[in-house]
Length: 540
Image 1 (cartoon, rainbow, N blue to C red):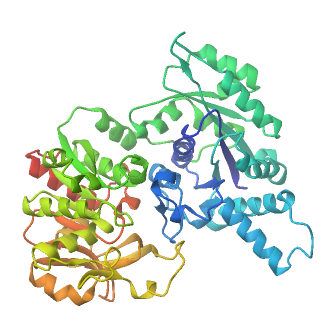
Image 2 (image 1 turned 90 degrees about the vertical axis):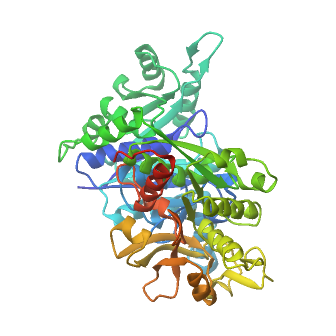
Image 3 (image 1 turned 120 degrees about the vertical axis):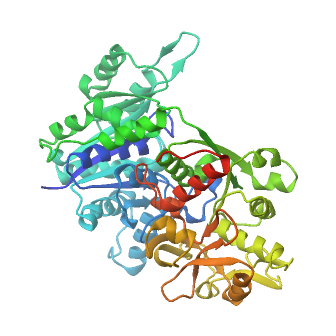
């Protein structure tokens, strides 16, 4: 069959839930037997989010091929249980860089370069690359931002043209909008949605389906009103009320008949009957009452929870799997340096230190690692969290007080963490780290090997600094176990402590491969250890 394209636009406000809507709809199609891929179009001029502050953009989600992408790709992978590639995230920066490079090369034969057709043609080329690269039958394309944003206009024009290029029978537009609630009159308002659709129609795109997001129940009369004023079938107005359980959204869309409506619009029949049994059990486990395990996430961007989105979700997946409620405490590492936040940390059953860059709050994270080691509290370090666990161990167990990472102190006499050799001559910041999927051999008799139940795994990386091999023997002799190594034995991928219930760090980012109904083994082992520390019996 010819590839089918579903385009998602957003209206009224940003952060309305386009990514989760697209991911959930992708799951509906996968359950019906179709191969699905998802693509995000980001209007910002950065080439990718790799050099952007987490405060600006949330986390950077890394793919198998090393692409640094928008966090919505994490939603796509987690919900649909697929692995995406670099063709699945397009930015304005990428598009303009390509067009300008071609112009400099003379590919346009001296012509005047314009937004239409040159920029829009490049966007369309990249959108249609996904089907060729993945073999997907359905390509779900989310346009970032909100209708009316000036920077998003080239993308909207491109997806408008694609209906002509690909055929009406192969394209469908879904507009995700917001229904504001007026407290004084206690009613939802559809007028902003009407204006948003009018704006969309003014540039030539008429939505086929409208997803009406709301924090309050949406009466059928409101759906009828939206259908009337926005010129869509009433059946194609899908009310989507905010749910406390994110992973319930696919089930809500299924019960609303969205999957059947899509296939009907494309004149297709499902290849298999959707089987939601496992997904329903997972959602039911989230809702049921269960004992609570308190985990401290000690980070430097904790004011914006999206900066650690995949970490938070991976912890939730593991907690669901272990039959416990995740009580996540956000602890700012810079506050620990000032003596604040320790009461919260001392009440927790486990401590997780995630990745990050820069020196702010580093000593607070090291103090958290010291507290976990001395008090036998389960500790899980991700990337930087693993490196600081090594620094802490070198300082206080191996007794080298000045041990550090050269990322924070280039003159340290004990650089237990140092710049990777291949990184030393690099000056550009963007896309130059060790990125993507790399293999790891697990050492027998270790906690890491027991957690995975495998000898060999592949995990996603994003870092410049690594364990300094000059200190391997010294730290091993003091009780550090190097439980995961690269196949050639040159790179330390996992470190753990021998005389601790669970103190383990990974150079890679395991959170990127966790799934709601298939949690990552290391996160499961960490939550299990936290439960044991709390005196809670897990119920997997």
